[in-house]
Length: 356
Image 1 (cartoon, helix red, strand yellow):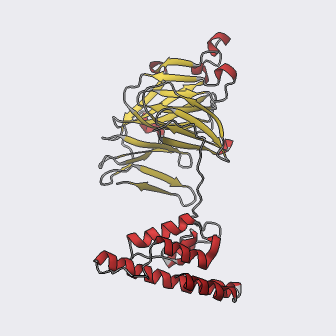
Image 2: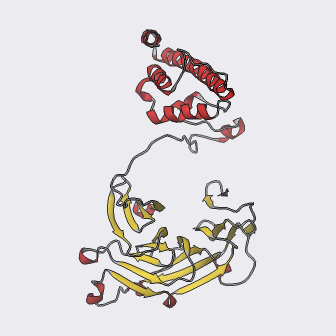
Image 3: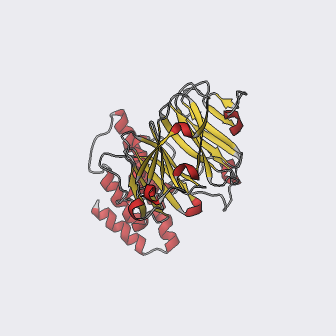
């Protein structure tokens, strides 16, 4: 095997760059053919091990010899795993570099340089995320206008990262319940998070003794599962928050600057944690689903809100916020076994849903 690799290197050294790459591709296709044939025989129980057996180490060494450091370790692992799991599946040589071709000539012909997307394997491990041991990230909210990102962990760690993924500030919520979601309040310039029974508003800009200034709003009637802010753009000193709960309700919760004591005395402002009565807040809710509401989102381009549930009958709702205040029928869609995720693409003007 080593003699073969040495001969490959000698052949490559005598060719031009284009010829080298074409030759490497032919050798790579030969390698794929042998690997696929071996994996098929292994699945049928017909393969007999010999000196030419291709395991991951041999596959990796050959790829490195053909293409050099341009190929990332993670891409080689992904490619080899794909062949091993599905020898009969479609594969393209460019996948070894982390690129993927859109299936279908008709669709590919519609794509231009502006909207062509390559999926590239680029990962960065964040070692100082402030998350406790045995904790997990439950929600990530991007704030484009401020060029930062907010994360919320299950055990109550709220963290703000800048665009370079460096921690700007962090806090721990003094609540025994698990955090289920977070978002950014665009008017009040604060972070909102929901736990199973409370709404938490964090003044992340506070300095000194108020650095961890949090407001806990409770009690809530049902277990809160998701949250998002409503960006209307015409509101001053107040934010509307959409929340979904385990009772199938979508809540429209309103918070104002007065609710968080911007006009309080200095003595009260020094308190790092304040408990607020949820009954003093405006909360409009309507039961739209017969199962948990797992995601809510306000789509500014459509001036509508969306909510989804694992409910097979009332799976996805898309309508005006006014429908939360009345009992008029809502636009809803039924999907077998429900919908647990959705998103909106403004450029294509489509909504995509995902379910089990």
